[in-house]
Amino acid sequence: MNYTVEKINEALSTVNDPDLHRDLVSLKMIENIAINGKNISFDLVLTTPACPMKNRMKNDCINAIHEVVDAAAVVDVNLTSRVTTHRKQDDEFLKGIKNIIAIASGKGGVGKSTVAVNLAVALANTGASVALVDADIYGPSIPLMFDALKERPAAIDVDGHTKLIPIEKYGVKLLSIGFFVDPNKALVWRGPMASGALKQLFTDGDWGEIDYMLIDLPPGTGDMHLTMIQTVPVTGAIIVSTPQQLAIADVRKAADMFRQETINVPILGVVENMAYFTPAELPNNKYYIFGKEGCIQLANDLDVPLLSQIPIVQSIAESGDSGKPAACDQNSIVGKAFMQLAEKTAQQIAIRNAEQQPTKVVEINH
Image (tube, rainbow, N blue to C red; front, top):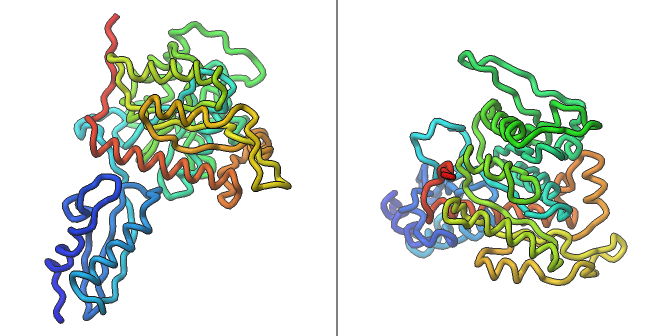
């Protein structure tokens, strides 16, 4: 039997992307088809290296070739990726950055920065290019959580403009006001000064090509949040909360901010942090210290996915203090939880890019 590229495309056009609900050929996810006797090879170009459905899609492709072309064919599927973006193609501002994701809570103490740090590291572990901007100008924690308190970004000249080279740790590019101020002294700035400093972190950074830029926002719904949405085109927001009803009540306000008609930033999903306590000596036991499944109801009310439930484990607190994020250990309970978060976040970004309007900077007229 003589195989043809047309017959192979016919077979692969029967395979749908499970998230986008369209066939792989029309989505242009099949490239470099090669035929050598009974050997067939091609690239399956995923929308993200963190795709949680990649093995299913690979197997579906092999089965389709066997059913439509030849059951005896030897099929080699090379998984690769090209992270999608829905930014306007002519947008020169932060041109190399494909997706910008805000990490918000509306309330302090729920572990938002911990989630942001570990999500960034988990995404980088998948092979994606990742950046993290510490937008908590008054209480920057990113330098400590990456063991980078003593590091200072270098400055270079790019076309007559001074640019900052972000600090890079665990595969993540970092900028924080904490790299430029004394960590032992309070930062006493009025709103406009803090907003100006945040803008500079975005505009003065020499970021290069980035698949996912995460923004660790401060608690509340104030100046820094408005500065962010008026400065950068945000792809979507992730809402972090603990299961407590007291926390959820405040977190709902953060979600409501993004859904205001004048802002209209898509919410990608909810992360339930401190979902349950699991002792190291009893890894199969779960104790719901702060209540059970509070964020499941929140996600349902917002009509968005629950992206992950992160347990309370002593190693998370220790890793934050030591400067080595828990997500670095991909085989631990916490590492696996953050990898699940990375996969589901990337999945929701790909769906958002396929189904919703391009991102743009929000204009708010007072």
